[in-house]
Length: 291
Figure: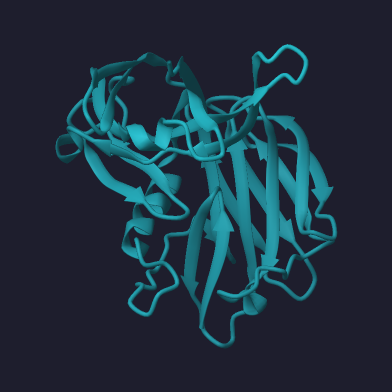
């Protein structure tokens, strides 16, 4: 039996036996935010439904080997801690629920890495060039996820003055093609769920990393509904090794998700006694305005 779980905006697929009925954990630890955990029941999760949350799960948080906080999941399987995630902290979760196996998971929160440059470069007939750079922390293995979002604004005319007024409509993923991806990137995932660059620092450890990307000018231009992307937001995540391995495996499931030729891959898990992912990361965002 295979199960599918949507977590951290990504797809997890775990291959299970018929005897399995374990807790599936989706935990998210982002620097500066509250730690959030979601629990689902493995034997009831299929590719057609994810509506099998587990309420009443007891979960205890340990920070730097010391117990800090305990809570229970609600009816939707969600548990939120008051703890505010700090870079460098060692986190451990101990999970218990009658009729399920005890679950433990551990991760270390990566340090923030700031974006040094995010700007437009050359503009060609059909694409807009962009450049992003950041400094990699030396003498340690680092893993990164880069993604791009656009703020789409809707153009309106004031009925009294006739002047144009703009209101934000939505944020959306912007598809990007990496010009120098072959030299640096592990994969480039673009489908209906993922759009990001996944990097490790094996060849640029302790150096300034520069990535040139192209985006479609049509995707940014004014559409038939009088909306257009007016600003771009580059998101750089310094991610843990476990989360990196999880994201890398997703490349095996692109781009025919749900189709007859899609691949069911074994996704790595850092959950002992269950399945899922405990994702830890720090995030920096840089924004530019599109004229």
